[in-house]
Image 1 (cartoon, one colour):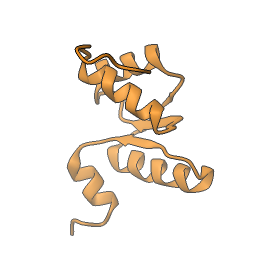
Image 2 (cartoon, helix red, strand yellow):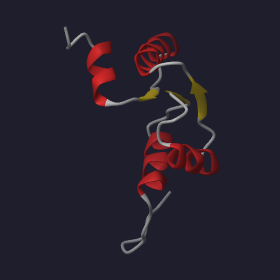
Image 3 (cartoon, helix red, strand yellow):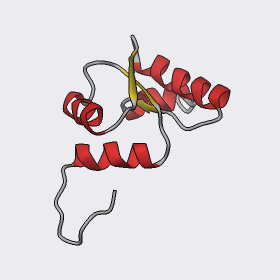
Length: 90
C-alpha cells in the first residue's frame, strides 16, 4: 500500500500493514493482549490469529511455526515472556 506524505494512520493500522508487508501469515497471542490492534489487523489483512494460553507458549509456537514453514510469524507478548522464551531470565 502506497502512503501519501500527509496520510495519518493509527498504530494498529501501521502494525497490520507492516506484518502483511513482511509476509506474516499467523500471529500467536493471548486474547487479552492488543484487542483493538488485532481487530484492525483482521479488517486490513488475511493474517490468522491463534489464541494461546500463555505468552511463553505464544513465543515458542511462533518460533516453531516460523522454522517449520520457513516464513515469518509473530507472537504478541509482553517483554518478560519473550525474555523467558529466549532463556534470558533465570
